[in-house]
Length: 491
Image (cartoon, rainbow, N blue to C red; front, side, top):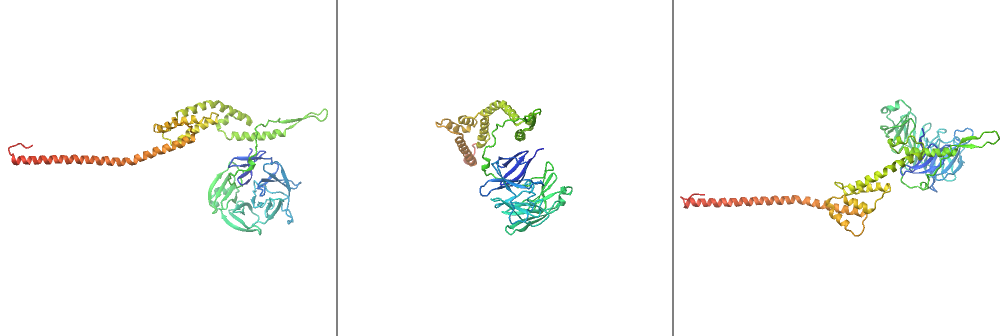
């Protein structure tokens, strides 16, 4: 099954390939630029040229071929022309130290750019040598000695300095070294990590390959179908399951939102015509039959078409995928989806217009209500039925409650026009005023209740005092009758 392969990484950019199609892409911004087909060679480096700020790909041809020497080439991203640099070795060197055999591909042994040089870790062909190449003209290979020998090593960059992860297959001890003195090649050990292998049962049955991958001492362990993440104390932090036994990518990706000029050139015009799959060559002599050969232009078109087809099919749901299973080209799939969406667009437009006509603010905030109405109008605009500002404002005003009647009246009686942005500002201001008045009323309500309660208490006290006075007067009258009118009837 074809795979997407990551060959190199730098400044948030990736060099990737799928079948015979190559790109430089930025996953953070989803931008890409095409590269020539490099399937016939090995990419060994990806760097930024310091003076011109151009991104360049270094690759080699001739590796693993005993009959030819390995030659190195440099390709500037954005062009289709490569420049051969041969195999330039420092004049101070007595031998080529394995460069004539070739470097390990960057997807397995990523280099690190530091200053004006591109550095490679010790190679399979020369484990006692760390290479570096000047990326300024003239290019020239040099080498230095690593701090240890006969071990697996990977390069990192730590605080502007080279660092080296040192480990061995199936061994629990790792080291991280940093090149403190670049000129004198003085390495200093930063960490020595002992993995807690007893905690990780996956390591008891299969071969595994550990490596330090960060300045903090994080360790990744590659083993079949899994990658394990440990801290610098050797303790297991997390497990990642792989879909198959393929090795994980060994590149560091730092996300970047910078805009690069390499992504600004036009890349696809959509008018590629399907070439004939075969070419018929006329017979050279009488009696010979014409030769039928494969058309190389058809192969190139087919790979491009299948790449686009894979991209489309990977972005649709399972239900949609079932409708396009019998279609074999990207054009057929696109036309099929275009017809399907065209037939449903009229019903969708009517449904959205009905939603706009019946929409109500209710308990929504002004911001949520505005975004809801604006979202529906944006859907109409996406299908070619953009509403005018007056229509949008009318829908928004119709959905407001009666408490917004003063605002609706003031907007409808305006002589000058108003845009949706101004309406939103007026609605926010009016809503804030309503909340302010409501808050004041809520704050004053307890005070009014206290005053009413006190007034009722005073009224009750007044009535009680009045009744007491009447009773006192009656008692005095009775006493007077008893004293001076003994024969009168008391009340």
